Amino acid sequence: GIQVEQSPPDLILQEGANSTLRCNFSDSVNNLQWFHQNPWGQLINLFYIPSGTKQNGRLSATTVATERYSLLYISSSQTTDSGVYFCAVDSGGGADGLTFGKGTHLIIQP
Amino acid sequence: KAGVTQTPRYLIKTRGQQVTLSCSPISGHRSVSWYQQTPGQGLQFLFEYFSETQRNKGNFPGRFSGRQFSNSRSEMNVSTLELGDSALYLCASSSGTGNTDTQYFGPGTRLTVL
Image (tube, rainbow over all chains, first blue to last red; front, side):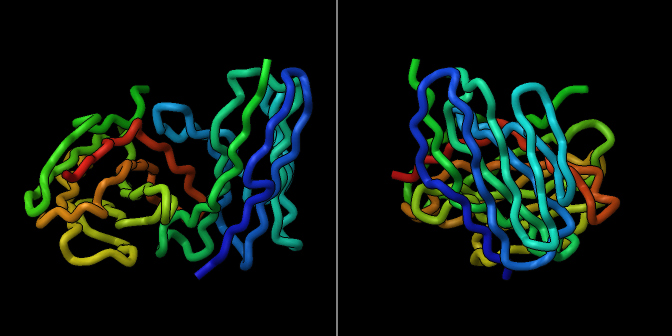
C-alpha cells in the first residue's frame, strides 16, 4: 500500500513563529487531507488538497502531486495551534480508506 | 449542519467482553468509515460502509465488524475484547459518491480494555 511520511516528528516553537510541515507519499493520490488533532482526540479538517495551493487565514497548504509531497504552512503561530498535525492520503478511490502519516507534534510556547 | 457524532465518548470493558460503538454521519452523507488510533500503530482504517453495504475493509481480524442502517447511522462491534483493542475509535463521514471525497471525523470513542 501507499506509504506516508511526515516530518519533522516534533517541533517546538515560540508564539509568533512560522512553521512548515512536510508530507511525502509514495504513489499518486486522489485525495490528500491535512488534519489537526485537538487534545480531546478529534480530527479537525484543515485542507482537502490533492493538488495545488489553498489558504485559510494563517494556514496554507501546497501539494505538488508530480513530486509526491505536500506542505502545510502555519504563520504567526499561536498557542492554540499546538497539537498533532496529520497528513492522510487515498490512492485507490477509497479501497483502503485514508492512509495516515505518523503526524507532526507541534508545541507552541508562549 | 450538525457534525459527526459518536456515542459513547468513553467506555471501559474487560477482556472477553464485547462492545458496540455508534456513529451518526453528517446529514446527507451516505458513507461512514471507521478508524482505530493507538500509540503504537497510529491511525488505521477498519472498514467503510455505503448504503448499508460494507464497501471496503482494512486489515483487522473478524472480531471487528460493523453495519450501517438505512438512515446511514453506523455501528461497529468488537467481540472477545483483548487488551490491545484499547484505542481511540474514530468514525468519518463523507458523501461517498466519488473518489475525491472529503472525510469529516467525529470526536471519537475512547475504549479501555482491562
